[in-house]
Image (tube, rainbow, N blue to C red):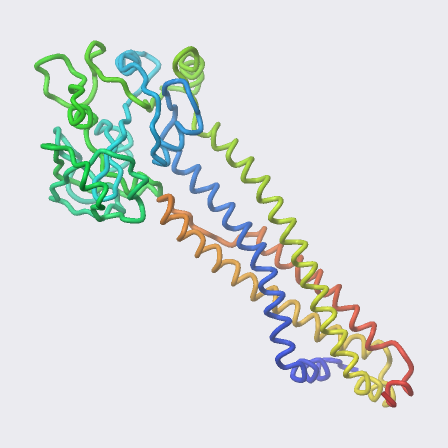
Length: 413
């Protein structure tokens, strides 16, 4: 006997009960899908943003804050390192390129970053998509997501960029307007290609401009007005961070070992990311366990609902058995209807979870500047499949209830 017509009849009879079951299962599945997809996407985005920083050197202190400030522009005051280190690294035979990074100012909510033209272009990998690279002091290039335009004349303000960025990106707030540097200005001459990181929202200027804006000179010998390395060891100001591009892996580890002693620290950003990802992984495991428990509670609630519905339909199933349908037919009918609801809920939950992860990615991008592309992969599909399978096993309970008991009792109920 084919139970499919009875399964379809049961589903039509459930009506709003069926909708409730599908929605409950979908929401339970979506939570786990969103957590898994978002966590994996965030790991990928944060690692990609750090790829442009082979080796970071700074004054002794928090290595996490050095990475957060230099790579992810979560701007906090960093201890300064003697500027002579910049000149020393520039002449080191193991170093292919070196660039200082200077922070502290803000323009229309965008953080102002002082560095070299070579590093602004990621040593030849990143070219302007509009205009050109800066070639003199008081010129600036902007990131791909900066809400500014080529030719804009910008007046920097002293202060913590986090007070206005990113919520007021593109607008001059009251606090920013009150701390404008007198006489300082930049002209935007180019826009860089996107990197997928927070630097896409920055205003990047020659480091000499930042130094001179704060009355520190230009880092070169008296009478020299050019920008970029080499810097003069006797006059270069102290710097919060230096990016180093070693010539080889061996050179990278040698430099890391030498510069992490005494008053300086040197690190690969991946070292800090591993620690952060481990912490995030622990949190994710807790959330996934909580999500699994939530799924279990949903299954119990759905099972209780289906058992109640089966009890109300006890006479219908007794009639089937009185007409000659075996107990296995009734079990297959009830289980099939319940299993269809579970699979439908898991499939809908896969889509809802993807949508939720995308929405969270937009929030993360707005807050951090990280481009967090979300994709649904094998882990999410396996999670939805596991939930559908578990739900189908739970569906055996109302199916067993429907098939038990005598036909006479069912007909008289």
